[in-house]
Image (tube, rainbow, N blue to C red; front, side, top):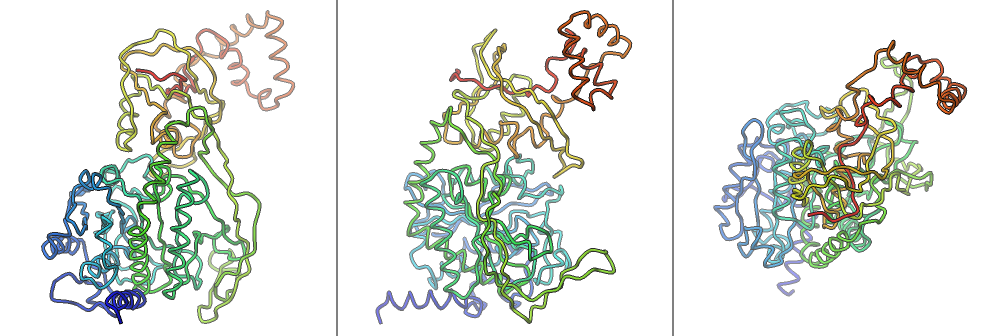
Length: 592
């Protein structure tokens, strides 16, 4: 047998049973998870020790790097692995090396990625699998993203997850969910991660999770973006990543899914599932909006920890081997998507998605279950029998459609001086280009957005008072003072800029509540003044006709004294012309 065939055989063996093959070694690089037979996972001091130990053991191939600090003062660490010692992002770009970045512990109770990543990296460096991968790929590995959450350690932090014995907490010390924070970038940890992503610009960004939900046989789901919308060439490559990774996992004994298995009706398997394009507050969808490939890996919480780590390790190895073979093609598609994005001015851009009514029936490998009324909650409760595998014939909503499509401005966006500092800071953390205007204009043709309706969410979400607005962009003239911020649409991150700045987009700054003050009434007309104003206005026959028509056709208006008085107040010179006006404009000009 040739040396190549022996190495291939060894790779296959380790891919099938890497946990059994990985025994504690003298080099000090085995984890507490391995040493305990994957019953336990280590604390963050182990990550700190291993980060340095990998560098010390393989100084020509690994560098331990701190890329940020958490609110509680802990270091955020990344291991950079490259066979040729390219540990600098700029040098990596100069060599046109493929970069893959993977992270564990964004939800620190879902910690499979940390232990699987250390295992995979050690096996690669030892030459036991994926020989030659690091010759062609620079692997940036973040063992734990949510470090403070990782150290909120406890036995029951994930009550519906099978192992390890103890694990970290879902959210940060500031009670923020990092996998809802990619667009608003509020958490210090997220700002550090975005700086790391801006620096390295990985062609593939993988986020390693554990999902909850119904109990079934499938052990992992692979969710890749963009696969359902977006740039056509990049989408073709992303579909290839998904399909090949699913096939690799099948060949290794897994039962992978290529969609996220979240039931349409919680706890009711008969309701089925849906393929989705989530908002870019989530990691993989965020990276797709930036014209790169995002991968969400979700092992299933009902599988035990050794099983989940093995499958996550197989996923990591699979993605790295695919990147070594096809990374150059992925990068070419991404570069072409960047070039095309610079010319989207005036084109329609989809900013939100939902499912159509179309479904297909799928055979899904579940377990026998019953749904009976609960004497405790009073609701129907599902009980699974995992000793009895059962094929569920259930619907899959398999089509998505755009639910919000907006034409891109031909020139860009203008942010007046008063709001510019907030917006400029948000744009900078995403790497979106903007510039300050030095030539004031007393009257410029722009488009303005005035909300016809602005609705606050009934409760805060991620600590913010979310806002939903309806309305349209309308032509207007506005004075633009020097120092206003201009965001050109002619840039690679044009769609990302629109996602932040289009007020109706689900992850816009408006939707996250950063401009709520613009949609609040600040001045009022007393009722006795409004009555006098109305009496005078009603002397105009056209005004009287308009008012009486509104009373006749709108019962809610007709029965509301305040709305009736506001009808006249809104037509009086004292009315606030900035009320419900979004303090960002669009322009068809490229401004300097």
